[in-house]
Image (cartoon, rainbow, N blue to C red; front, top):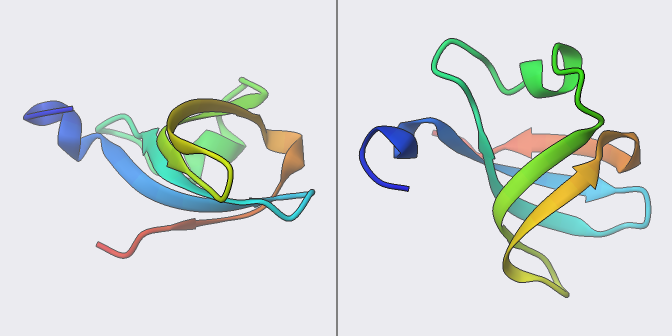
Length: 76
């Protein structure tokens, strides 16, 4: 993720229904907002790259949105 791609990824932290907290990066189109991932996207999955949690280090995860309790973007 270099150059233009870097500005299109945003760091986010989520908590899942089983209590796992995961931090990683999600792709945000240049004309979109993070909230669009949850409200406008028809995909049932959130794709996180460079995901880190207690049990995961630097992985790509596909997380079912129905299992997300909350999501918090990193402050810019």
